[in-house]
Image (tube, rainbow, N blue to C red; front, side, top):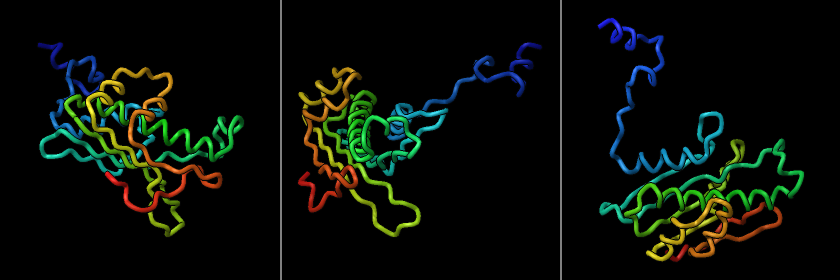
Length: 180
């Protein structure tokens, strides 16, 4: 009896008290949490998901997110120019999100990812879509799920991906319809 009161004390960590977080069955929240977990830095996700929607039959998913910025203090800038590093990082993040989404919801048959460049706070420019990916076959799904984490960019070779490399800004704004 006394130990129950001790374990319920606010001074005892929750993991020691055996209290578990109530899990949710909402697939959108589950996918959002799984993606956020892939991009944790000091306990918080460094990737901002703009929207995540599932079709009513839950067989297709659309994820829209912002490309992570490259900061001037980034050590990787010593080896590569900013534009190359930004393009590589955005494409790698896209591949990771595709893989994570299919791992979390293996019943999906189609995934569409849209990546936007995050507008700077002082600029009044509209958001720019820089990458559009569509993956929609069982073969692609099995390839993505079997892919190792060593080279996530290799996943993109099997999908329908639109992007344009630009030497000035890394990835150029996509123009026109996406065709999907």
